[in-house]
Image (cartoon, rainbow, N blue to C red):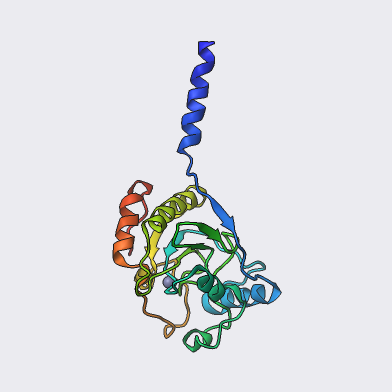
Length: 217
Ligand SMILES: [Zn+2]
């Protein structure tokens, strides 16, 4: 009887070490038009001519939406084309912004699109970056501890699944301008970002130290 016990103990330990994360699928619209706009974006901005709008994930970029509610945040990503109040981005492409994940203030993780489909969330790096948006970042709606925990769990889950080298906050993206991963062709296309806050990133980095991400350039 005893000889059966050891494998069972190993099995339990092994299973409990796997990153456990609950993800709810809540897809945004990804129709033929969004697919075509994404393929166009990949070619125009990165010189990548592809049949499918897929990415090779080597990076995770964390964000806040600067919108206080889940519904408002989801609606900002849902539609295929950029709304008319974003003329700053419209010149670069009509493709709406989005991200693969959106985390609500209570820590619930929603997957808005397949993990390896390109989302428009970070200039220069969309071809390789998985985006994680967090509801909040506005006056009176700071990111929460529940979101912090969920971001850590999601980062572990994604790092377990893909060869992720870098974990960055959106405000750090321009550090990659001379890096081989940076493919943006338009030198005039830049935005200034502060999300998801330095304090939030510091806490995430502390909690994911053992994942050994590469240093930012
Ligand atoms: Zn952002």
